[in-house]
Length: 253
Length: 308
Image (tube, rainbow over the protein chains, first blue to last red):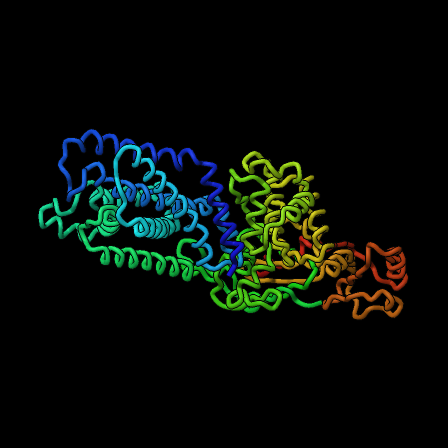
């Protein structure tokens, strides 16, 4: 195990994060604060409780998930795409490192950044909304798992992308709609039965539902199913990355 | 001398069917400087990339220090440093951070003293806290070398080290290479500048169309180049070389119309004057004289043409 390599990649990526701290941290915090003000305070005051929770509080887990998923994906995809773009990937390919070590370094750093942003947003939420967390340990565990699994997804996107447009494409066209339609701002029980059934094919539903359960003890789907969904998603991403490095898809000729 | 890098029947064919390497065999001795000369598209970079692990071979094996680059890649790659042809660097990193990154990636613990020593060796000490984007092209190339040396490799691959580099910097680069050789590093460089191979290599390999056409000690090659040939066309064909001319070791053409004399331009005497006198005394009439000298360039062009 080349632990020095993992540490080196991790520190290198975190340094990049610190160099761009303004855009990395301030913009998600600012945009989420705006959501709290608009949906939580302004519109939320006219909305009844959802499943026994005030609307302002109800949207907090979904908003954290929205930021964490998009941040994890974009951080990880950029992290591995940039060496491809500058050509410095030659160094990774010629170094005595295994795919797991490369993934641990890049995905670990991207997940850390996303986790950091998630926690900052949670702290910001306390400013605007009165909330209590029913299962704090489960909350943190689910947050970390989400950070890791979406960083893995981002890593795959970064390797797949051939240009900066493609790098933006998946987060914009796939992840944002899935998160918005995954119950960030509503309970899926509010949907007509047909749409409820369709929604169950959206993996994000399970993440948001599980995360919301950790806050309020209520969920659209059971926590066991949520955990299983996250595990399957993480394992699928890992398996795909293993295949990428085995075949050299898009990185090695 | 033992081979530190051993390439056996290495073949690389791309998906489109293009065969970049056709069964290459190569033994690189520890401590030597080997120059691989070849035209563009000859397979120089593919060969280096395959040894370093960037390209996967279609068949064949490569061992570095006895470690197979496929089955024992960690040990093999840890011994290798690679300076790529393209300047590939992260623009917003500082020089020092970039070199430290390379060292860590190859599994070595952080060592600022070592990194600073490498930067000093490459005259980069005053640039170490500068961002790479602010450096000139020549300086960036030095950073690439520093990165390749960061983990103290025993074998260094330099892919076209002087491409796009001015004359002065090229000389500096040669000094750096000489210094590295003195510290025991084995160096393999690719180039299409013949003078570069002449200036720094111990052995020269010529590669074209995915094949190594020749690999020879540079001194031997130079010795061949130091020889000149004088061809004497005769007015009348001679059936045999006269006894009086035996000491000149002449070569008679099959039709007897010409004689060829090989001499060393670097020797104290070429012997041409006495030969011409003796020819006249032997009663041979000369029609024409011509001299020719083979250079590395001739050998190179000849081999590459022959191959086409």
